[in-house]
Image 1: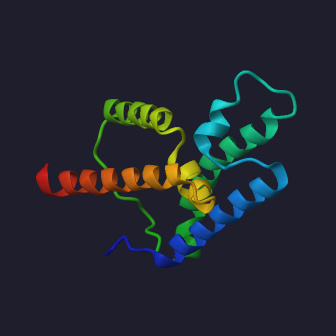
Image 2 (image 1 turned 180 degrees about the horizontal axis):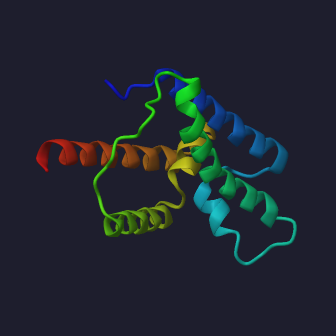
Length: 145
């Protein structure tokens, strides 16, 4: 329970929902990271800038939260716990996520935030699969390995 952060989780969830809603209202697009990044190439005139802005904003937002979050919210630790996996494992994990995204027809953000909001059956199945896999992975990592 030491990593339980309900206030910042609720604020973050509300901001994600708000940004996905605003993107849908003002641009008619779904806020799925794999769809946004996958459609950058080939270039489409007038379509590239919002996509790049969205993708650049992801790490910038994370850096901002890492830098200023602990000073604003007491529940955010000033130092993140280390994971202890190497670069090869991170690259392999990234490749597996990419493969899963392609097989699942979208990513967690697209299915979890936008697909469920649209009551897409495919998204409910995808999110159930993501969650079941995450539960098994955490169990194996914490209790088996």
